[in-house]
Length: 383
Image (cartoon, rainbow, N blue to C red; front, side, top):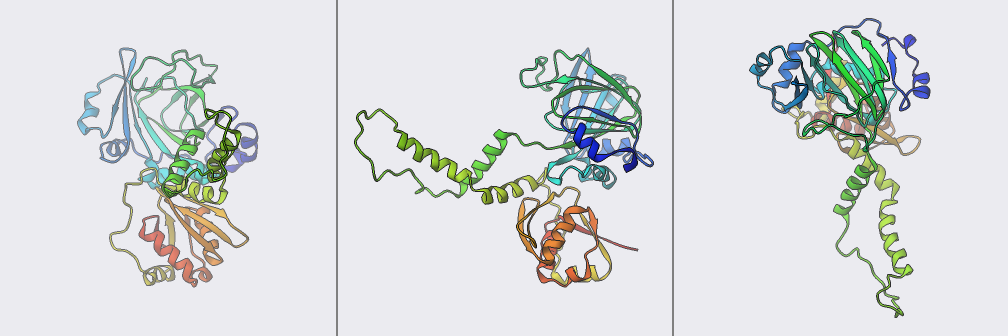
């Protein structure tokens, strides 16, 4: 994306989580990164999350993948849409679409969903709980945008899709290849393909709810709490009425709960692991043969470029001037000195060369070995 056509500071100040923005083809040169047939092939695979939405009789019909190959030839002339989640995990060129949007922190990025639609295809008017950049890849799509929604917004009686019952567009745009539409959370929208071979890339972001944070954080805390960690009242005194729950007891009980939740260091480590867990943690990306420290040293000596697995999530928290906690795919590593510099480098770029001084550090090499062997890193050798 051409930075001269898109000012990040202005966007974050005036639009991010505030209002939609249409960005007319800011790329230096736009080239659709994925062939429609390759997208259909992904949708046929086990383990790849996909959906097929068909518009028939004025209603939307949803099927979950994997999609049988012959299913596409059965769709006929009715409008339909294929949606495939996390295509960036499998296609390097699609993963590259995330890079222009890394002014948003890594931990907020979810994935790139890709949709293919025939003329008239769409998924109906709806709203999402997260920010999204909608990049038009092929063909044309008309986007209509309405007002803000919430849990009280009326929905159609549909067993599979959360579609708005009363959608009233207030703005409308037709997107051509390379155009981008940014939508903040909860903005009503409806996209309809105006041509066959209509492809859209949705760069989506994560926004944990308070309920999810509390639920997942407390679940983690509960696993560590011993059975003997209980309420005690050795100074108990006789009450005038045994039915009263005293203020003293309530203060003690409340303190038991809030003290555990108030441990910021424990929360930091939990959230780093939690937010860096892969979207599909059951997928095994580890190499067939584990690498040793000598193997890694040899690769680095051969001018190898280290690359992050597109399915992996990298982030870090500063612990001091020269130390960080590195979080990769749900695992925490304490890094200091050269290994901390390496941790920041790998979080900053999807591909990097390890500096000679860092490659001499044993802890940095140990970190690389661990990340290679869990499938979080790979190697591209320069020609």
